[in-house]
Amino acid sequence: MDAAWLDVLSGLDKMVLGSIVGSVILAFLLLIAVFSVKIKSQQDRIGALRKAFENCTQETQKYKETIADHLRRDTDTQRVMEQYRQEADQHRETEASLRRELKKVHHTVKELRQAAALFEEVKQKLVRETEKTRQELLASREEVQAVLRRNEFWVEQLSELRTKHEALKLKLKKQERRE
Image (cartoon, rainbow, N blue to C red; front, side):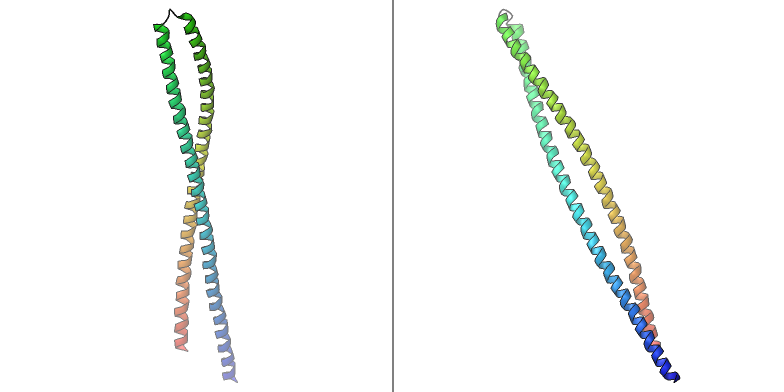
């Protein structure tokens, strides 16, 4: 009777031990699957942020080109105004003609002021968008760093779990050898 009881007890221990080992293996596989999905989603978010950054960079480049064009126009307009001033000095005897030209210059200056005001609005908008893009980039970098730190933490956890798993395997082998 004592031998039968020991057989039942040893069979029960093997079943419990087998359940524990199976549970640990399943938990390990589930952990790997969860982290794989999490890492993939983080990589997708990083890709989306990079694409948004590239789009903002392209828009910034377009605004820079627009600003350069406005600056060229402004320079050209300043040259025209300088020519008008030189002609005024050279042709004082044609005052009526000069007054007509002066009216044209005033109209051009008004348009230039309007263009300069528009240019300033575009410039302010560009500055705001550049700052917003910079802040988004900084936030993205911080998020990437946080993700990398979490990944390192889970890699360490996984390494510890593997070490424990290997220790359990060795322990099981030693117990099997003793039996």
